[in-house]
Length: 574
Ligand SMILES: Cc1cc2nc3c(=O)[nH]c(=O)nc-3n(C[C@H](O)[C@H](O)[C@H](O)COP(=O)(O)OP(=O)(O)OC[C@H]3O[C@@H](n4cnc5c(N)ncnc54)[C@H](O)[C@@H]3O)c2cc1C
Image (cartoon, rainbow, N blue to C red; front, side, top):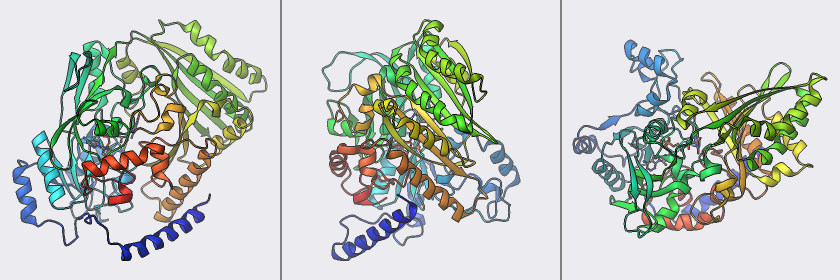
């Protein structure tokens, strides 16, 4: 399915919608954006600022001080120094980890000339930098009463641009801090046994949660990148973790949310109160309510983890058979309880590399067991060593705590670049199909041919992820049948022309649809997916979509909390 085909289909759909719009005007108000005649007056914004105790910010792209009309040499130097810092980006009202969702295609680049006028791009026009439940209620009421294009922004890691939007009003939750451990937590109004839990406020990052959990002698299932918001988009979308095969997805560990719904009411959401919303918020993505806190189960501290660091280098010709062998190894590793991150990239001019990190928690430092699991791969590499076309190197280390893993093996990624991605969840059978495996290996290798493109294979499913029923909660049912999450990345530099960016975007969609053909019937993880997925409702939620949409329209009947490719985008727009 090529991009031309997609363009033709979308043109046909636009024509149908246009005809429909004349016959039946939308039941829902248009979302007001900055510049529209319905945008509130300066006096209304000043009143909002006063009610929010001065916490309303006129948000600008982070590189604004480096350009006219906002140029300020000292402030620009500070921006340049912090540009790739994850936490700095989360804190700025106008910054996003991925600049594709910050500038859009309007220039305001940190490396661009000062005399190029800074454009607002996709950065919200005003941001309510909320600090309390009451602030959130004020902001939601204002958004609803003025029919604003509203965005919720936490740690700003979203890959689909859900937390930014041209001319929007953002509710920034990053300043809502607090981490509280309880030994005997019982969800409100429930008659169930007490358990150990931690309640995390909406603005916490995983790194601070991991440090607090370590000090408290427990572990929490959380994201591999410790700069991701611990109580924002991650649990709403599903939340995969290196601990997921042992303890399930993030959504399998949520005991309770506290939220503000579109009517401005504060609510507790769990199995016993607002249970339909609880079902939806565990995987339905953003747009159901504004989270003020999430309570997660905690698990006993992991005393040691055996970590296998693997690097498999091949010539271009030897790559496909080696990758095929590597794919067949995934079920073996999963059966031995390993989770893993694998990166596939080309190493110009001639080579390819498979880099991986495999983790075996609570393994008592049993290096023999790790060696036995990896024996098939080592045998393959040895058999090809003489020909000189495959070389393997491994290092096995034992980490004493989860926190050590995040501090020593997974330091925060540099951010502030433009990247896009596409993905599919892969079932076990896809790795066991000896006939299709060489084609898949060949295809994945081909994806790394362009300069910014890489492939990732995350062994973060299987095990406990596959235990709950597909309709137990709103999350994509494909997770319950998945062994791994396969991602393809691309991106561009600030000086890439807009036609070239569009080609990269179209190319990524085309490749993602080809990837999907290897796993018919499987969906994609909505937090790490292609924004241009053609059948996004089915791909992100499968058979759960109809129920999610029903719950969305009951809790937010006029579409106050919207975002692109979120539940209800097809009804309310975004
Ligand atoms: C470097 C990097 C590493 C990642 N690693 C992982 C990983 O290991 N595992 C994984 O599962 N995912 C991972 N992700 C994907 C991540 O889960 C999503 O990007 C997620 O949306 C990030 O949430 P956020 O709150 O940090 O981002 P934001 O951009 O701030 O928020 C995204 C959306 O989440 C919703 N949201 C956020 N806060 C709230 C709130 N308080 N109330 C209501 N809605 C809210 C809103 O719809 C918002 O638009 C990674 C992303 C990046 C960029």
